[in-house]
Amino acid sequence: MTQEIPRDDSLLGLLKGVEDFSANVFPETQELFSELAEGQSPHTLFITCADSRVVPEMITQTQPGDLFVCRNIGNIVPGYGEMLGGVSAVVEFAVAVLHVRHVVICGHSDCGAMKGLLNPESTKTLPTVEAWLRNAAAAKSAVFARKVEGPELLKAVTQENVRLQLAHLRTHPAVTAAMANKAITLQGWVYDIGDGTVSVLDQAHDEFIPLAEAIKREHRG
Image (cartoon, rainbow, N blue to C red):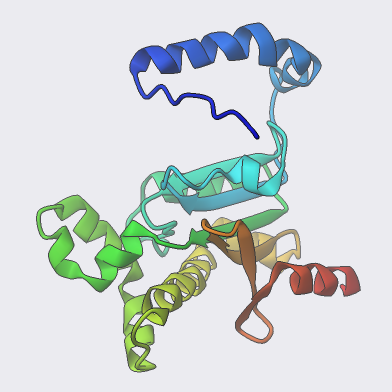
């Protein structure tokens, strides 16, 4: 039986975590960090939700330096010119300067942002969140038009939001240029927190498919 490590949610706990990293974890990967100290060349821009349960490097089993990560409420990418700011700057820098080869937009199950989108009353006292979620409003409209109801509603709007944000991503000039040169691939995922699985958007057929099937199709090219 595995013994659970007590959770320390204090600031002291964070400081002790850093101490453990510096003393025990860092020395084991010092060569890697020495290389990274001179610069970065990540292969993927990973855009996901700020939700604390979503850990990109853990989900993808990647190393420091592999992912250029952008996190925000609802894994949203405003259309170019709509809300120029942090997300737009990250996209531009990752694609035009770092020359990432892939961009993944990853939604997740039980997303509070998507719940807020479906229940506008819950964000009435959160004006900044309310304004931000307007960038996902079309996803809700699309799902409501299909008359999805019940337990499938949250899943449907989460998936539709990934589709929508990929469409927004394509409006960014740096992305458009990279796509024209066939220098970048875009992909949408939804991560299920409860069972640890990822479904992948097959853009050719506009459907989310299991990870195993996505891997097969990627192998076939």
